[in-house]
Amino acid sequence: MQEDLGLHGNQLNYITTAWTCGYVIGQIPANMLITRIPLTEVVWSVLTMTLASAKNFSTLVAIRFFVGLAESSFYPAMQYVTGSWYKPEELGKRACIFHTASAVGPMISGFLQAAAYDGLNGTCGLAGWKWLFIIDGIITVPIALLGFLIMPDLPSNTRPNFLYTQEDIDIANRRMEEIGRKPPGKFTKKKVLKFFTTWHLYFLVLLYVLFNNGGNPAGSMIFWLKSFNTPEKTVYTVAQINTYPLPINAVQIVTTLTWAWWSDAVRARWPPMVVAGLWNMTVCIVLAATPVYTHITRRWVFYYMTSVSGGLSGLILSWANELTGHDSEKRAFVVACCNTFAYVVQTWFPTVLFPQVEQPRVFKGNVATACVNFAMVCTALTVLALSRRDARRKARETQIDDDVTDGHVSPDNDSKPDTKDGSIKSVLVVEELVR
Image 1: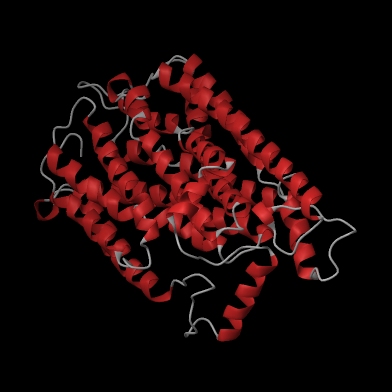
Image 2 (image 1 turned 120 degrees about the vertical axis):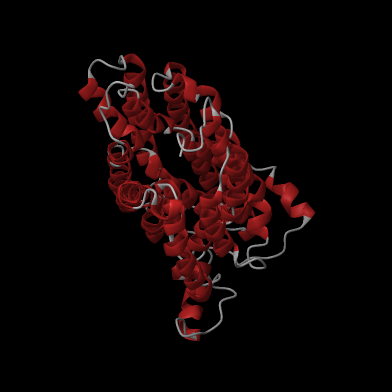
């Protein structure tokens, strides 16, 4: 695409930034209106197909902006809905299994791009990269329509249908009541302003922002492979440049599932964040210190390791769902803000610190990303400390109440006589998640 449209300088960065701007602008309003605009995924798919019609940089920028706008409701809404159906000991696996699609998608896309370039390039007068967008739309439009028909709402407003009986819905609602996860109410100005008086909004959003910007060195591998080619000699073909970085996504899939099962097994979200953050910090330091064209094997391996923290998204948003589960509106707002501000930073972070003209060396970008990963580890430990503090406070104040405040309370032998066994069990589960 870069060669076909004559893109130069940082124009590829600007195209990505255009998508990010649309994605950020649409985040919070789209998620507040998600039940009223249910066909956004179809619009997203159709707009993706129209990218094949782009003939210049300006058209690409415009279409990518609207693609981001249409896509904006998808990920945070899916994590919010997932958090509305599953208990803490179930949520990490489900959220992370869903998140693996973010790694599987680029892998499939890479192979499709290679196949489209080799087999369809020039067919009907269209370049191979244009065929990729057309194929993408052919695949995704039917899936989007299927999702419109079978995706459930929340347990509190799902109606019986061919997938769910009334008994299924009642069980789902009881399960959420047991862990204190409230059904949705109304967004009011007073309620939204109250969100800003608690630590959850600031530290959970900061944690997600740092995570989301901790894997940027992965994008340098394509530029590194391209840099070996000269006008006189081609070392890597277009197909190889598209497929050789795909193990980065494979590593993300494996580590995503590893973090999910580990987190649910030990009933704690923070250990994978600390391990993955320190690992990625080390990887970034090694990439910054390694010359571009010597120690090639080392650089190759460490590029593949840049996605070790890429699977933390599901765990961080699961943690946010659990810590704010007592207030459905706050939960939706915090989850949406996590994704929104992560991409607000993403609009400038790669452009400033990983400019195309400095690829693949990007020394300052690698150093900055090492610092970002260290900050993520510190923030995760801060969230842990604050949630434990809240648990201790609640234990002292209420001695176990049927309503689980902030998602954590500690059990006590002097609990109220009418406390339900289910509530006690859920309190124990949620408390363990902050250990």
